Length: 111
Length: 116
Image (cartoon, rainbow over all chains, first blue to last red; front, side, top):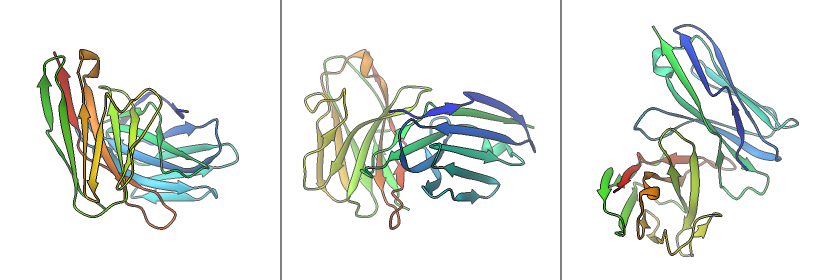
C-alpha cells in the first residue's frame, strides 16, 4: 500500500527550513528518501532502518518513528539545489526488497 | 553505487507496436526492478527481475503485456507490447546495490515513451 506524503508542495526562500512527512499503515522495515529533478533519475538520499535512527546528508536529515510508522525529512537552511520532487519509499517487514513510493512532495526553493 | 544506463532515452511509437527498453549496469547485481512513472506522479513497481528466475509481476501488470528478460547479472530488458496511448509514460529500471541489511535501490534516467 502506498505511503502517504505531506505536504504535496512547498515553496521556500533560500535559507528557510521545511519538513516533509511520510506515513504508512503497515509495519515498516525501512524508509528510503529520494529526490528527483525534472527529466532526471530519482537520486537516493538516505535510508532509515527501524530503530528510530536519524540520518543526515549535508543539511538534509531524516527521522523514523517505527512505533508510528512515520518518517520525516528535514530540509535545513535550504539551497537552490534542493528544488525537486522528494519521494519516500517504504519497505515492509517482509523485507522482499520491494519499495512502495509516496505521491511525492514538490519543493521549490527561490532566491 | 551502481551506474545504470537505459536505452532509448525517449521514443515515439505507433499504437499496436512494441518497444524494448534496455537496462545496463556497470556491476553485477542480483535484483533489478522495473517501474512506471506517469508524468508528475509517483513510481509504480511493474516487476522484479532476478537473474536465473522468472520475473515477478505486481498486481495490474502481466507478462504478456510487459515481458522481461534478465540474461545475466548486468543486463535486463522490458518490452511494452501492443502499445496503446495509455502506455505513454516514463519507464525506469533500478538495481539493488545496498550494504548488508540496507537494501538500497539506484535508478536509471528512464525511458520517456509516447504512444500515438
